[in-house]
Structure formats: C-alpha cells, structure tokens
Image: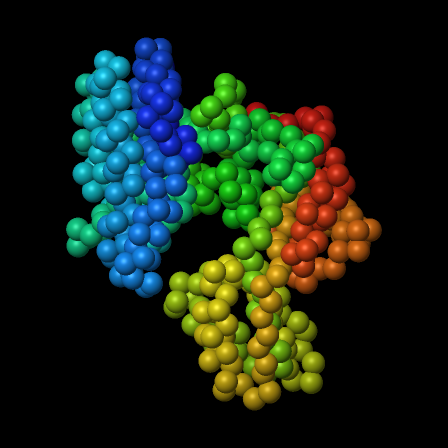
Length: 411
C-alpha cells in the first residue's frame, strides 16, 4: 500500500457525473489501503472561456489580473469534487495553490514552481482525508496568484508527489497512455507499456502533448514514477520511470511532431565572435524559447543562421531579430511559418548508428526535403514543410517498424 497522487485533466472533470466516477475510483484506492491526493484541472473548456472573457474586457489584459482570473477555473473544479466526495461519505477538503503553499516565481502565465509546503496535506492524509488540490497555480513571494502554463496541472501533481514522497503519480486523461505516435494520424500506432524518463522528456519536448515537458523533468529529477492512463477506460496505461539497464531498449520508441513551429533565417552575418549572441540574446531576454539552431559554414567572411521558435512567438521574434540585425552590414532576415518538426526518439539509438541513415532514406523516398536537422543522444529531429508533415510521420513510423512489438523492452 502506498501514497498515490492522481491528476485529472479538464475533459475528465467536465461534468459532475464524471467527477462522481473519478471520486469513486479514488475511494476504491482508499479502501484498498492507499492514501490518495487528487489534483484537478479546470472543468472542460473553462480556461478557454475565462481567456475569452478577459479578452472581451481588454484585448491585452494585465498579466497579473489574467492569472488571478484563470486560476478560478481550477478552484471551481476542486470545490465541486470535494463536495461530491463528501456526499459519497468520503472525507475530503479542497485547496487552492496558495492555501497549501505552492510557491512560484513571479512570472505571470509561465511561473515555475520553487517549493511546496506539505504540512497541511500531510495532516489531511494522516487523518484519512483526501486533499483535492487545484492544479496550474501557485503564489509568488508577494502573495500574487500565478499560473504555470498550459498543462501546468501535470507539473503541480508531480511536484506534490515529489514533495510527499508518493509511490506513484498517475496522470489520468482522455487517452489510454503514450503511443508510438498520434493514433489519429497513424492508426497502426501502438500503446507503449513503458518509457524511460529521458525518452518521455524528449517526446514531450518535441511535440507529444500527452504530458507537459516540465512535469516529466520534475519527475525525472526526483525519481517519481509517472503513469499515464485513461480516466474513462480500464487499463494500466504507460509507466514512465528509470531505465532498467539489464534489458536492451528498442532502437526507436516513438515519433513526436509539432506543428507550432516557425523558422527564422538570418543570412550574410559577419563571421565574427558574438554575432549569434547579438541575434539570440534579445529573444532570451523576452523569454522566447529558441529550439533548433543551425549555423552554416563560413563563406566570404559571412555565415547564415537558421533557428525555430514557437509559432505564437513568430512575429515578436522576427521584430527582435530584425532590430538586432540592423547593425550587421548586408544581413537579411526572412521568416517562414508553414513548417513543422518531426522527431524520432529512443534510448536504443545510442548503440545503433543506422538510425540517421534509415530516417534520411525514408524521407528521401517520399521526396520530403529537410530544412533543418538536429540531434541529441537519443533523438533526431528534422524541420520540414508543414504540408509534408503527415507523410513524414507515417513513413518514419513504418520505416522503424513501430507498429510491431519489440523483441525485448525494458520494464
């Protein structure tokens, strides 16, 4: 028997009837001898409706007030769930992020969790009560309500699990677990029973939307086993944990993709130290993440640089880069929004040099041109024209045989 933190996403708590189903599920775990903590997202599309409300009041709402407004979605959800649990005869108490001391940075909309006070939760758990905690939110040093970004309830759940020393953190959602790729695009995609933390970090970071990347990084840092499973259907889902070294991993575990990419290219940059920094530092200062970067070999004393940013940051990033490039004689900036990224990920890639060749061959056979290519120890990512995204994902899924169970797998 152990302590389990369960997080339910917005679609899973969209109605009182759904909440009652999940309340009974938590009560069953409690009857089996487990201690349970629940973390909830806002009900259904509540966050979108609150965003629309803010934008109807002002096209550019104050970030502090927007955070205060958006946080109310989760507060409604946890209060309703606590009411449901108590009606069913189960002791329960709802909490906002501030009430249990989820401390964050003072960065509206993108705050990182800096600490968690577990005193209140531990007292409830020891008393046999189920705490129901609002995800997605915390409080900064000035007492302001903050939010931690889309998918932030995942990170809240993992942070609580790590702080409480939970045996498992379960992310219950509207999918059965993590698949080799999106089954809506590739019907042959296969449910993965186990992934290592580093594989899931790469998949989440490269576009897989099952888990927030920060949540997986948090779980990896504190070695909290994560399980992604359906809140609507029975099944053990996908366990994400440390790799077991005595079993060889498959070469490629999955394929992630991201349509939310934009490419920025700066040509004819003087080949001098500090030029790339001069272009990219304004983006860092503006908290615009830069992803794939390629720097061409020098020619005639000049170089070209290409990199990607999130599509929603595209216009702002372009403005900042153009301003930074003004002092570079001959430099020109061009941008392209109609691009997408495809990434193949697998811990087994470390010992298989053929992965890159297989990827390039499969894409070449489909006539798919590569705009940028980047690698890590267990990942290869390519930037392609958005119109070829689906063709690229399908051909790579087939090339690596991901519709077939691997002969051996960790876990």
